[in-house]
Amino acid sequence: MANTRQDEAPRRFESGPEAPPGLYAEICSVIRATPASRVDTATRTRVALAAVFCLIPAAVVIASQFVYQRQAVGLVVGADSTVHLLLVLALLAALTLAATFVALRRSATGSQIASLFVAAALVAPIYAAVTLIDPLHAADVLPPPVDLSPWGARCIVLAAITGAIALGSFAAALRRAVPVASRLRGAVLGAAAGAWTGLALFVFCPASQYPHLLIGHVLPVVALTLAGAIVIPRVLRP
Image (tube, rainbow, N blue to C red; front, side, top):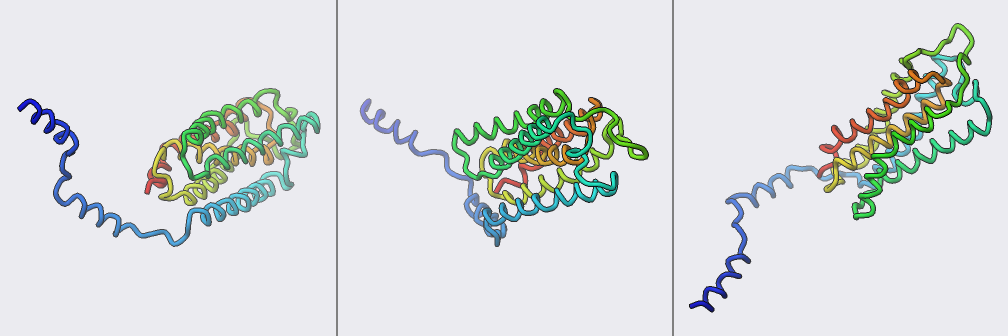
């Protein structure tokens, strides 16, 4: 009897709980009701990158012409040195490209999830450090009638436009393509969108005052990262 009970115990553990009646049929009906995408993720990613590379510069060009009646004011007006300008530009461009590359990679191995975490955590602090430590531009660099808002009102508007372009494009590229770590991936997509926004603001605006830089430049990068983590995961899950 003892041996019989010992033989029966493993069999009881091997047989798990039965699925509720109709569960399989419900899963199948949900799968059938979900339309398959006609465009694969790789193609959507290429389209998203093309949209970002075209629409964000176009937004900067239009805003620059509307506000300053000239282009690339952040690059040509009031920089303390060409070396400093090129260094900051290179750092922001490298940050933007790296964050975009990490955000749009589809696989999710352990090392890649770690890179997602690093990107989500560090894009905003790195941008803040580059922007706020030793600001590039001199104060009051623009002649009248154009003056810079002390709180970065114009930059917030441009940040909202460019951030929406980047985050919307990236979310559309990975729509229903991230079955795991979707919240972390959403945060990285938001951070990448924030990096694009920060680069656009650097080209657009020659501000050096800390309230303007903090509210008009750094805060949108933080806000986009948080928006990506909160709003985007539901778009990414299959």
